[in-house]
Image 1: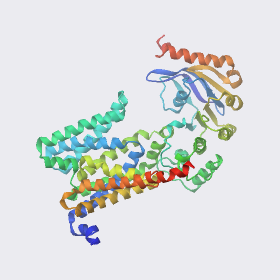
Image 2: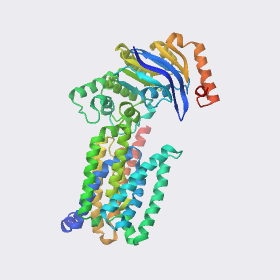
Image 3: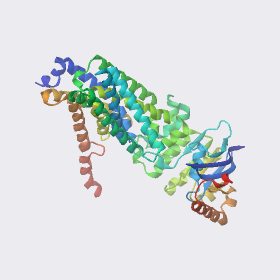
Length: 244
Length: 291
């Protein structure tokens, strides 16, 4: 069963494509890393899958009735906002509580449980502005835990995070994988991908290779990916394959 | 003696009681709005919208004189128009939203002053620009109270998505489509409160009742709930203090500016001595941190 099916998907801004004619499937319960050089369209692809960015052409299909959780790059979050860790994590209950729903005692218990699972017990009443980068990322993972989604998308979750936090959070990703959730993560660190992610999509605007990690992350493919992004940047823009 | 200063004016004079009721209503409605404007980095947007209301209210004045419904309706229409236009221009062109707002409000201000001058005297112009908090009649008080009621109930209903939109708009977009609606509703509340404030404090000062208490509150707490309470409290306090001082000073100090000045004093006091990042506390902390 495929969780997400991409069919000839092209995504971009102002008609300039950033992800080009991408087709393929992400299987249910799979653990996939998306890697590629800067400007390869990795974050754009996640934005497309979450529906923040409408496709220029092609389509994205999900298996029915699956909830989706998305962790954007941390820069999108206003860390000066006066809110506590507890309340930030509690946002993960949105699907359950919505705008008006009550957050009752069982929910409070779940929130505490999620905070404990990421090792932030005792930080509940801390304003988010006082957290370190690693602690912030732990809090966001607690929110993901509460979202309890079948499909989880992570955009560079371990960038600029200390080694210990990375290891703890990676363990959570493995736990989700063990629970048969579908996890897709944009990553930079090839070693982490080799070690922990069974499947990989190597992206350079188009898919360079997509499949089992060991077969995808060959030196030839990595070189090819870098070459493709550079070539694309030089040629610049509008989608030429459409014109043909 | 103390009674004469702090309670006497309100016990004795009807217009002082009305002014106090009006200002309290403004503070209770505008304080929380100001907090969200500040947290969303839209403080200048509030200012721009306050100016934008002027030509609409002035048109109402031109048509019907000092008529509450005409000026209120005109102000609302102009405020909504500029809020939507500025957003549209920012999205459709290279201009950033702040520049586009600045352009709109400068035009609005000039246009508004021109329209009022067409018919009225300099006194009328002063009244439109700075309001007359000591001349609130029943209709204005009912308008102020209604706007405050609408603001508070709407804010209560939209509280969750509004906070989420400020903290993590990307997350809200991923779980709900309510972001756009919430933003527009919030802008509508801003316009509504500015139009209400316009009747008491005039177009130029109305926004002061929103922004100054909110900015002052930020120096005392880093918690959104308390921030809302503090801003409301500071608003009420400055309203009361401004009226008392203005009364004591006789005719030399007009009440509207006195209220905003009181809020300004409160802000500067908070800036200096606030427990969250106040300058004095910082200066005291520095040697300790350097060691």
